[in-house]
Length: 159
Image 1 (cartoon, rainbow, N blue to C red):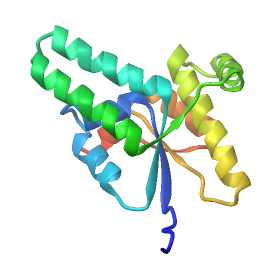
Image 2: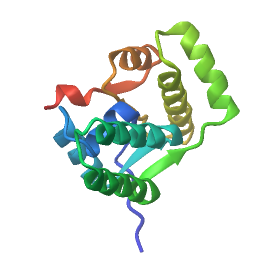
Image 3: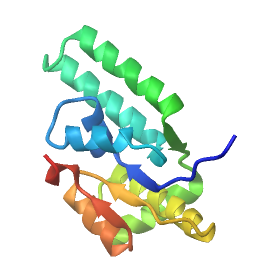
Image 4: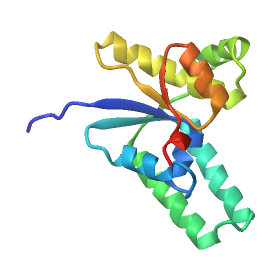
């Protein structure tokens, strides 16, 4: 069997990933991105929790009913198990995230997402693979990622 090569790697933070499960500006673009063949979607494990919390908030706020919230959560878990490359948050990532908060205007988990993306990007480059693109709908995170040398995309700019 012939192995297919990866055409692109995308790191999605929770502000981008949630758009796959809740209709928002950029949802169609994220769904198209996730449906592309030969691509890798990388997500830090904390991003799964953040999306689950956002969905739970939508249920509590009665934006979606409990049944739909349960379906969304099941889809998120299934996709996490089968479609995403999940990245652990190690002490190394936490240490880098702490340093990133000193250099950039970042909230805590945004710094963890950026540190995770930077670590994966270095590994890709070290293996002579194409660098990743960080996808987020957070201007501070995107600005910090660009300052750290990452390519970025904002799904909100793709309605």
